[in-house]
Length: 254
Image 1 (cartoon, rainbow, N blue to C red):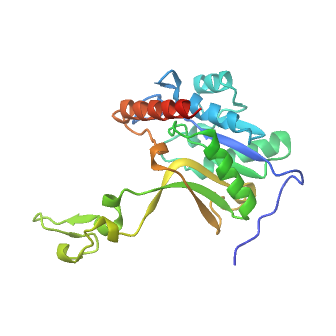
Image 2: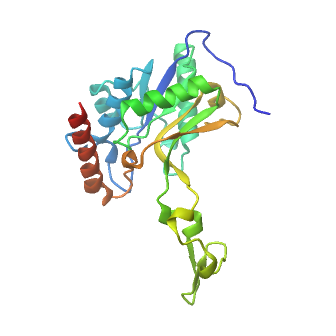
Image 3: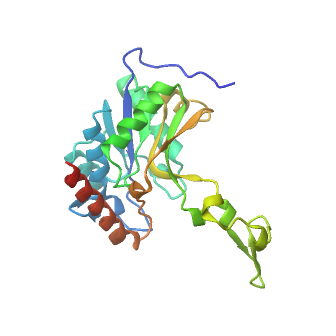
């Protein structure tokens, strides 16, 4: 049976946007403030968060003073610098969220009812995604909501192959090729996290151990065209082109 989480504030339901942005990224050095189209990458997430009008606070969690200054310039708060041990390759997202929530409790005496984690590496995220995911979490009674997109049909589990040392192939579970599903129309739809949004009820973050999931998690389905994730240098130019195309499409609709 799902554990009920309790509200912390007693006021209208409130949201915190937490944007984790460490300075020591290795795949794309300094990626969070690297220019993406016409502004630093992190600015796209900050501006989408502010434009949504969902949040009482938009906070950037970073150990890097330059990132903090840029975040403030674009309208976010950066009220603390994250401890170095939470800015390593191995630091977990939940530990970063827990640190931010604990900081708010110590310094402001209260925290919003919900936390929404917005990774800067998803610049195609739009403000309406944030609003819809927030409404889903607040209105459903779920512990958490995460954005997902449909997996391209050639990457679903029924199509994944295992390559043996002698170059023979089979299905991932050893299924002979002749017995695999080959027609796209016969494949079940599958979904994966796309990194745009992870959101949860704040009490989960304060549990021991902390979590951002709980027992009752909903998927917020996002069109795959918005699923842009920057991990390696080769992603940059392609992602800029995709976001530019999305913006042009939006301007034509408006």
